[in-house]
Amino acid sequence: MKVITTILVLCMSLGLTTSLNANDLSNVGNLGIQFKNAYDMQYDLTSAVLFNRLVLAEANEEDIEEAMEEIEEAMEEVEEALSEIPSSPEIRISIPKTSADTPLMGVYLDDLDFQDAYEMHYDYNYGVLLDGVVKGGGADNAGLMENDIIMEFDGVKVRYEDHLSRLIKSKNVGDSVEVKFFRDENIMTTTVILGSRKKKISEEEIITKEGKIIKKLSPGHGGGSWIPVWYMPKDKFEDVNEIITSCGFTKLREDGLFLNGGGGKGMIGKGWFIGGMGAGYSIDRKIIDTTGVKRMKYSTGYGGVTLDKRIPLSRKLIPAIGFMIGWGAHTIEFSNIGETYNWDKLDDQLTSSENNYIKIYKKYIMFQPKIACLYRINDWLGIRAEVGYMLSYSYHSGWNAEICDDTFEIKNSPETSYDGYTITIGPWFGF
Image (cartoon, one colour):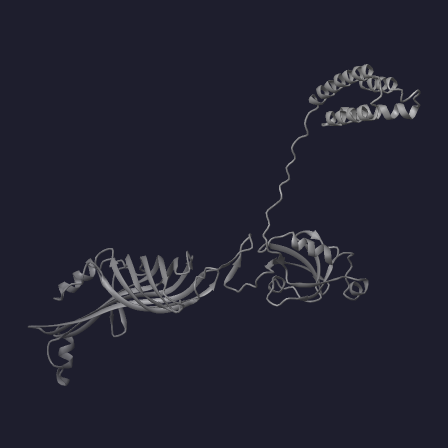
């Protein structure tokens, strides 16, 4: 009120007014309120004072000075009142980051009219009609077709063509969006991966959330090769060497045997490969002593079905983990020819120990967990390294003998295992 009084005094002292009506008082009151609520009111007051000085140069100088002093006091009160008003809180709005590229669903849209809905037996009052789909686009890959009706996009009911366009633009390139649609009087859902308007991507490329197109790391497609295997048995061929040396032959190497084999595999999806492999080893030795010619043949091997999961770390380096399940065996054949077979003496020779033959074996069920690494040289050739451990289970006790297609159990024979490490390094064709 002091501000209002001061203004009235100033006006009366200058002789500019003789009476105030209700409207004038209202205007003056509004002016006081504006002084209180404006942050920079002191500048407005100063400008008003300067204006009065210029226009009213003939006014009484003493009255003007007195009025100015009152105005200055009023300004101080306004500044003090403004300092007590709390400042407005800072408002921060977080806008999610989107890619510079505009997402693309790969469809041609049309608003759904009554005639279309009637002919398609569509009973809803919302939806957008697909006038066509772009071959190889996100909608095409998701199974959408021309004349489908898009009902919902990421859980939001679609009202008209522009509405769906805005919903698509609100996403990022590479987003996976659930779409509900109507086809042949059935409501179905599918997942659409939004593409890029800047560049079409190939099957070997992927789009990041930022809209970047990068090369997809491929685990390969399958192939096959020769497979060399260094087999190191856990028991160091102790049982096999015992029987071999007892018959007069040189024992096998205790540190391992070099097996040769082959295998291949093909991809069944998502980096999984199924295939098969096998490897074996054999020797044939002869000696002559006082009893005649002795012969020993030893063979071993394993094989089965393989399942691997490849996890590419780069375009060239692809590790894998998997297993093989199959079968294996040790087989030893001994023969002794002491004299020439004679037609007239066959009965005697059969009952004597001069001429005889025996085949003994032990068979197993095999399980081999393993890890491998494939290094790609080019699109059709690589280097493959693998380390595994063979676990064996024999479904018959001891060793068996096979004579004239009959099988006989060998008494007091050992429970020889096939457990041991395997190491493989070799080429791989086909990748």
